[in-house]
Amino acid sequence: MNSNLSSNSQNNWLIFVQKNFDLIVICILILATLIINYRMIKQGVNGTGDVRWHLAWIQHFYQQITEGVWYPRWLSGTNFGYGSPTFVFYPPLIYYLGSILRLIGFNIEQAMTILLTLAIFLSGLTFYIYGRNRWDKLAALVGALYFMNTPAIIAGSSGFCVETGSILIVSSAK
Image (cartoon, rainbow, N blue to C red; front, side):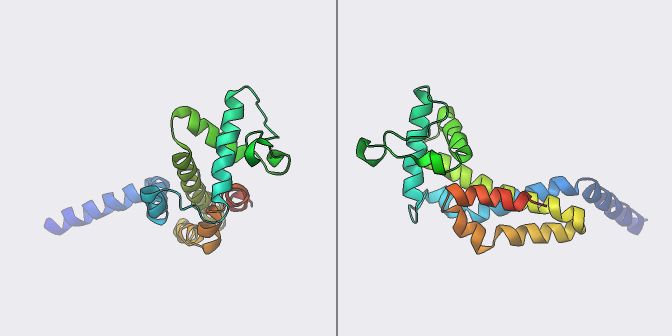
């Protein structure tokens, strides 16, 4: 009688895991993202590489959007007021997202931390989606966790602008 209850509960557990595997994977990827990016979340942006430039660009991009310039190609507040043609060369999507976060009420460092954390999570999620269509779900999860921890993703996300966009594009390409 007792072994029958035990096997029945094991079967219920397996059925639950099989039905909700994608939701469990999303929870695992969120947890992995928080572990990978824990130091930045706790201590803030470290300012290495060109992160300082991107912090300033988010600030000036946000400032120009609030002034009514919906596609600021020329950041007039940079270079000691002389300006810079930054967004003639750089894609602005990440900066629009950063500006939305600034409008919500986050400061610049918090906005950048959220964007970098989101990029790491989305790289794992899109790799999992790609992998489950090519392999089985468990292999896709292992591959997604591995991909999220590759040095190009972790170190590249600190470069922010082009690297963050390329992380999102490369991980979603089929």
